[in-house]
Length: 355
Length: 275
Ligand SMILES: Nc1ncnc2c1ncn2[C@@H]1O[C@H](COP(=O)(O)OP(=O)(O)O)[C@@H](O)[C@H]1O
Ligand SMILES: [Mg+2]
Image 1 (cartoon, rainbow over the protein chains, first blue to last red):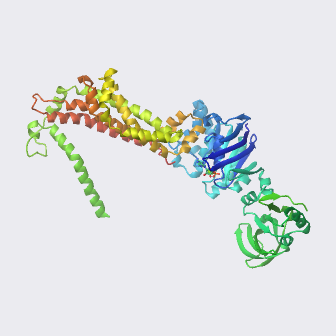
Image 2: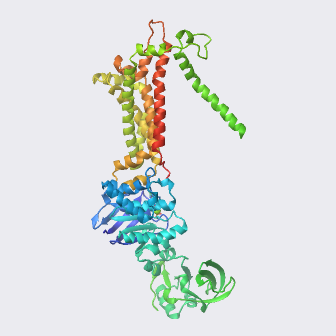
Image 3: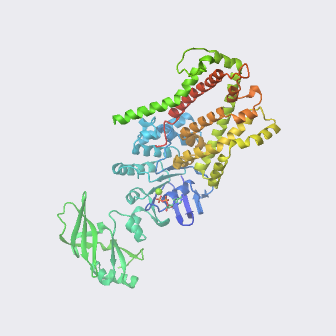
């Protein structure tokens, strides 16, 4: 089992682009770690640095405490599932899965057994004679995963392996992949821009933006205690409600006076951004009053947009209620906020507020 | 729609006739006695039949020796061109070494030099090295003339093969060279085989260098050899035999190339690039 460590890693393309900007993180044995961030934030570049397909501009990458910067991709013994799958088009499924073993000079009969059992595990045993172009997207993805799983590498790298699948398959594969990589006990680094995927699958999430790591933590921590507004907004669907309070009167409309006092001490000018997750707003009791402007059914729940007025301006929040509740657009409603779950942001950074 | 199709067929027929008629006329001339083929106005259909031209070719020149020489020179040159050309193209297209752009421009400039300007310097050089009447005296210039353009064509094709395939190969544990011959080369077969065939034809048909550097009868290539067929008397030019000779060496070549192309392209591109 294998550990990976990034120490002050930079990757520049030309003068202007810093795709990875001072990355420091650690992946422990057998961990399933997700790199999460919007498109273009440097996730693929980070994977390519690990695989040795790109060289770092600065910094060190270590596997099991050994610096691997100078090793070529074939010497690093890492398995990677490419976003495009990169199956060899001129080889059939068997050959595609077998080739990492064949180049390692494994005996023919061992290759056959090994590929057979991997194909069995992935449910593609009947496809072994087919060429990649004769496969569906989901089947190709399985072959790509098979090619990675067939050997026992230092690390597994997966670059948005579910991005090209349809929604149903994507949801099903999410669980399956997690189980699969846990069962082989492999250290896995998974890349996605889909925060739901990251929350569902990971032991640990590394959130990136513009090449800079924003936060590293367990899914629950990322969700409940985001370090800044970017992470709070990026993670969670539907998005967190962000309300800008311009002064103490605005705040006192929303929460208790002890909190207002504590906040005032922190902010000086009384300006603060407040993050409220939709599930932390309770409709039907409380003393904040507003009007329903939009109802979006989401299966078991309704996502309700409510407009209310602070002192200085009108604001809108989204919240969940069960679809059994009778409600329609234009209704006057009252609601309350779970104060303990509120997040406060000063200059984009989250601050802890007593009281 | 119908009319369009009809016009298409008419056009194709005219083109086919335009291309094939001279060949028909060659065949006709080769199987008729010289007296008939010289008749004026020309007779466009067979009237008499004789094998004498074909027999004459074999009596007149060592045809099989010429074919052997041409085959050795053309095959060796083609093999070297394809080997070096495809590896260089791979390096340019997939490894992206520093300076690959200047390298490609340099190759293009090389391709502009007319081969004819090399004849005399090369003659001097080969004479000094005692390489005249040696297969190398043709193989070396043929390869060096062909390689630049071959690299260009193959590099352009290899560029289109997704780089992710090369990278996947490297991650899967292949060395650069393994990634080349297990992944890039098989996927590049359509271009490689085309380049090989064109190279082979060019070598087979090359005349001036072959004429200059191969002065001994038993080292001549077929193109030169056939042009050297002469009549029994100096005023007599044996067209029938020359034509028969040309057909004897061309027709089998064409058939071989057709078969090769069919086999190569259908057999090895089964997996085309699009996955
Ligand atoms: N080879 C390259 N040359 C120049 N810029 C690049 C190259 N590869 C990636 N980039 C840039 O680096 C940034 C990060 O890219 P990438 O790692 O692919 O993002 P992600 O995978 O998170 O979508 C982007 O701004 C991208 O344009
Ligand atoms: Mg990417």
